[in-house]
Image: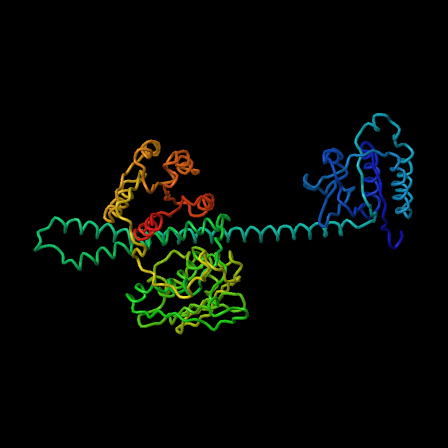
Length: 568
């Protein structure tokens, strides 16, 4: 037998010849020590049913796309491995048998049997010609011992079992981890919701009882104000938590787009610190704001803190980082927000003197619904979304966030955001101010008294709040709960401003603006829509100067400031 029996060829075998050829090869395998193996270098394509019927020939397609035909009917393969291509070329069988004979020339008995089989092949039978045939591409013919074949198959089977076992272990671990995270998240959410709600309900009930008490038994006014402040802070905490969950879901769904505009970095940083100053002071933590040296380049002194980004999202990033620092910094500690622009990249650093983060737990920082060891977090609020959302918002800006921390010393979060810091003048030809006015919850624009406002809102509590605010500011307010009725009354009332819940039937898709444009006497009416949708609808109406938006829940000072601006 040749020392290197393998060779390459392309052959086509008629289906009905398989049975005759199979009988010959089966007899050869019994008398000749090696089992006959035919290896293919390419995948067998097409209909598997043909090979399934040719039971003495089994095609096993294995990685990387190599197949083999076996004359040993005791070795079985999975049906999913059978693939053939439908063609017809019966003359190729003679060349195939001749090649096989040359490989077995040392065995006269086998050669004789194959020669007889080749002489009696019914390749011209019209029935045979009408049958499907099988194409084998780049066939390698080589003898191999039965022991070697079994060892090879056992090795492949063991590899397959090992791989599948590992995949099952990983899937089980992933499922267990997901279930644990879900359980922890639900437990945390239960605490985070119940605690402030208990505060709100309990203190509101207490204040209601105080109102019916005799003056000598009532709480002092200062105590009542403290209760109201606690109710307000609890509501803000609940709102922030809900906003984080909704923002995270929108970011992951790809529904969050950046509203990029030119703004002052110093102003956003200043406002972020000011918004959390009271929270830090109540905990005995000092909050500082420092400007980093700016690599000015072509910048001027009047424009070196302006750049292009989404100011609302940048503020959200800073508030999340500062709130996290306040949460984990003990009384007497310090937190510093540094900001600046270096080579058209905005840099923020939030440094605290808090408890620090162990190195083996830092990988959990930016994973949603994950918190550090309970020993570090059991005394602090949160559902484990703040930093995960922060990282998502940074990446929306194509930025980077990093953390450096030492246990017992403190933590520093650094954020780099690519920025296009090109100053653009305002409509009056002036550059925006580089330093902001204090962000106070009060109306800056004077309120125009006596203006008529139509409110379209079906939520009683929201409507009552808005009516009380506007009435106290000397506006004439007409409240309606139905959009269709309001449309009919607007022509008679001729209001200066319409405030409407955009989710009400008949008020969506710019319906109010379209209605107003039909009447010349109403085209100057301003429209303020209250919506829970913060982005898409706002963009849809950006071209309509008469339509503006506020996002629910509405903050009183924001509403008054917006109304004052629209009616100025």
